[in-house]
Length: 114
Length: 114
DNA sequence: AGGGGTGGTTACCATCGGGATACCGGTTAG
DNA sequence: CTAACCGGTATCCCGATGGTAACCACCCCT
Image (tube, rainbow over all chains, first blue to last red; front, side, top):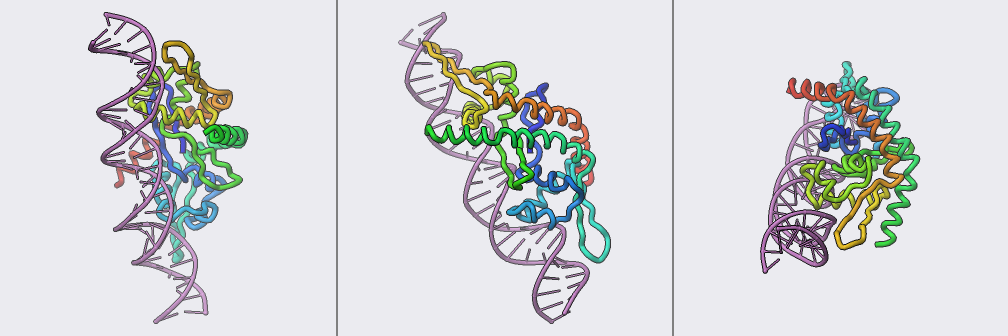
């Protein structure tokens, strides 16, 4: 997702994968079920989604609750820790929205003089 | 580096690699030369560093200037666009510093009940 | 009994990022 | 002449990431 780079010790540390950011934002407005997550994340395979969810769970960002009852029903929700990430993520998104065009322009310009 | 995830269109988009964040932070306080970058980024190979720098250059975040003269001297600096990233990155770093322990605890707890 | 939805797991496979190593042209110092 | 430094490039290789497809148990509905 991103590198929380600590200036103190210069080592690259990453957590999160291709989909983690998206998943967290999908959980922003409340718990979602497994299949509810697959809808907005068009293209994600079950395997990768479970993988990402397991990692997020392991890191304490997302909680998994299997609701009892005859129907199989599993809900994923943000933990407080996960929710605390929404702020920084919003900042990053704001930056991206603001500078997206410049990025594309730069890439296009760079491709142009190839 | 991180996913600037736009909530509007849910597609995973990433730019930056393992070292991009670190490189940008190394350039925070002024231009640096190729070999000056390799020092704080212990462990990075020349190939990977050039690769990352080329990508950052392509995206308009970093500028490369080969100074004329008999001595080979190349300097990398942040562009205004690159500098605009420092804010969001600081936010991310602050989050990381604040919640780093919780993350580690969660991982440890998860590993514990394996 | 059969079909469908939910929430996965497993095996297989292609791709890619990144690390190690060697090399290279130009320049300067000893 | 030789060695060393700068800023790379060329190759090889490995492991992780991620995608596809098949399969599975459990439950519901008809």
